[in-house]
Length: 181
Length: 308
Image 1: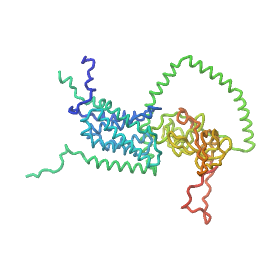
Image 2: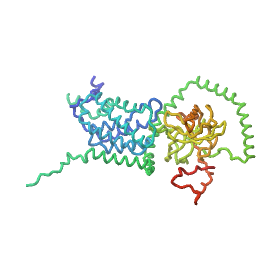
Image 3: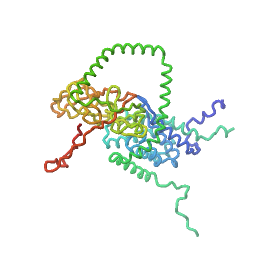
Image 4: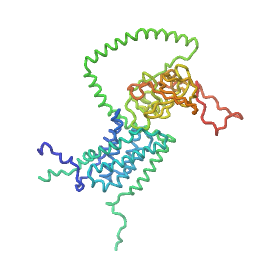
């Protein structure tokens, strides 16, 4: 059985007491790149309306787990890339992501003590704040108010948080099964 | 005795505090926002980054395209046969009309030559494919697969087989950004096909119908009227279908009538589009009036529009 399913345990969420190995820099970079790709992938219809900001989610995860590698500066730079890919006003995502990273820094010590679904609620608050900031910036810049579906992506993003954090922490789990034997 | 060092050991040193970082980067972002919206200094940076991101974007389109090919390949014979019969029937049905059209066109050409009218738009046009739609919920933009390498210029009109779709607003080496006519404040000078009355159609943003602004309540407009480009802007050649009037509200208390339109082109559906070359034969701008009769600069609102 253990041979067939060697890594099932590593996909269960880590308990707060568990010490994870430090993430490899290339893994952080790769996850950010994949998130950017997911953000600009061509979609249509309902999928397009519901698509969460994957980049914001992944950034948030790394800001909480690896604050010494990913912080306000990295978030700002990644936001600039997103601005270009999206052809939006320069600095819009940069500002939003920088604020997001600061928010993560503010609550990262306590958020990991909660079960995943309660983390998701806190993440939802941050993501909605981030979306409101973008809305404010664009509204001041003269854009019309978007439709009510504008509220959907942050909430979908929060729902994806448990899945995403389990996926992103899997490579950092110490291989307990081997050491026990 | 050596004094104890008060510096933080390197192990604990984390650089500036997060708040300081946020203040620095937030300010930088605000400066960027301001310069980009006001002055557009940063187009070069944008071009460079877009060029780097381009291969990524193209690669993303591959899975979808591959799925499309597979779907086409397995499309049943039956479907193809049905489509074939349908097309044949349509061909026969349109036969008389198209023969009449050829005759009418020849006659029309002769008449136009007689009247020394300008020939219809025969300028160069580039066929492009839509890569993807912009993700920004505040604007209505498309990205197409040809750019300055294919001779596309910013400001060129974009149409599909049924009518005007939008205008090229930004050109990168290998792709361009098209702003749709439904985007907020995107203006298209139009004329009513039936009466020739001229107006300007403005987009109102996502999910809202474009409207004709600044049109007198007495203007000759009816629900169902087709709007075509008037050609007075020098961007769109005259006579391209733009929209249909869906509602006219004449409120005597208001200065202008409220006229909503529905775009005719598949503004958010078409996959293949045509980018029209900009007309080159615009006469130079008339000289600004000078002297005592000139309008004072302070109260003049806008430069007079270019005319052909």
